[in-house]
Image (cartoon, rainbow, N blue to C red; front, side, top):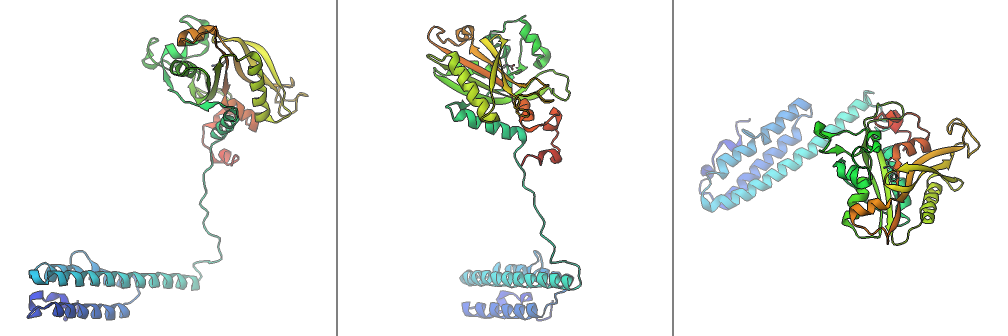
Length: 367
Ligand code: PHE
């Protein structure tokens, strides 16, 4: 620092110490700063040390003024010194910032002139993520069912055997429990389990709500399957349930047909095949005409013309007993769809694992 460094003197040396003198003293500092800043070198290192000289935390000029002028100032001068110091700080910061910008701009221009920066290069693209294919499929399914008065509810992935099995008319030792290859938690059969389907939410919803009920339930389900190209130990389902005073099999069929046309296109036809689920009676497997060949037969539909979509049926009256609904007065239907399957079928994906591997080369195909 130069020998005439204004900050090495204390405020006491201002003599009679009037506010006017304080102002004059700060004017002097400001003037000196302006001169030095104007003449400062724009070489990065020299510039950096100039900045530190003035704004450095410990021994920068501004800190020294705070320590030597402001702190020991007599009460009647404190205000004037404080105000002047704030003004000086703002001034110094503004000038330094402006000069910084100039230096940066100058450096860029110089680099461009030396040919180091090609200003004609396109900018850097920041890729924006997209929704996962499964999520997109859920959105599509929800759109269809919301449009006909269903609402979305969600439920726990950790369930009790009561909700996952018993209240769905699957008593202990019923063979349907074995088909479900359940993950039990803590190894105890009486304890908790990972839900094997979204159907427990049928029970939870009817326990809580009075009819009419019209819900869909998106969610993850778990089964002890050996992973292969079409099986995983976790997959996605969407459950549907409609219960009201006089819902008929016709309502069921109409809803299913509407869904298939919305999901696969207006030309898709629907077929119901008899099936079995403990919690629906009668039960059906819903097929649609193959979306690839339109029903004439191809490799995708194994030359049958039909694709299996999901399981469904009229709610078994035994289920109403568990939720204290009156089976004499109520009826309804339920369905449970495998969302991964539907997505793979609709978008021509042949391997299930790619849905969970998060390979961007796959994900980017579904913007
Ligand atoms: N929960 C059954 C399954 O996971 C599907 C289903 C739901 C069938 C509702 C009928 C009614 O296989």
